[in-house]
Image 1 (cartoon, chains in turn red, yellow):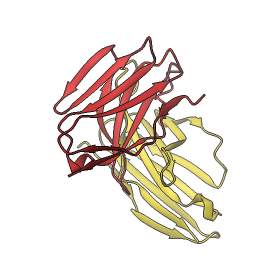
Image 2 (cartoon, rainbow over the protein chains, first blue to last red):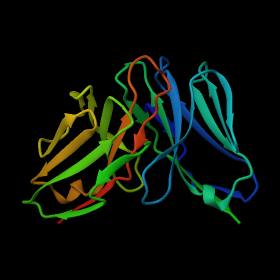
Image 3 (spheres, chains in turn brown, cyan):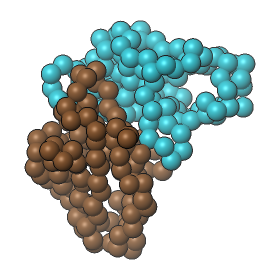
Length: 112
Length: 115
């Protein structure tokens, strides 16, 4: 079992729809969770982090965390073509080394 | 200043060359990282420096040699690389300590091609 798992996609949604990206992790002691957006040929950009169970909203983005189910998700409301990118889920585990473990990434395509 | 600056942006080197990648941050972060990323794959951790000391080496071949001269600078020295080492090399920095929400800030990366 991979430490952090994501569906690689592509996930295709029409413009204006809600995109839902999912991530599961294996280390039950994981402390904090991050979503990075990466455009083709560019470096990852941090868009959300969450460390408490529940929802965290920032503009069109909502991160959801359920530690009991070891599940974290990212919702993008009113999806725009400019949201088309690869979304990387990253988890800081229980080892306190600062190391982030990345999932494989989900490619999102928002069609006009 | 919230940037991590990497130079050069692109590098082409022969298998017998020696080159260095440079990374600089002025955010006061005391942890710095080198990642390698191949196309359509996630970033893969290579090295972690914490307070200028190497704390993690993910079994990286010795042809990659990291160096942290001070708290703002991180270098990656390259020697006798193989074509399969061609990738995007990413530097990142982060806070340290007990704060649990310190994500990484990535630099723009160095696109390395080994010929």
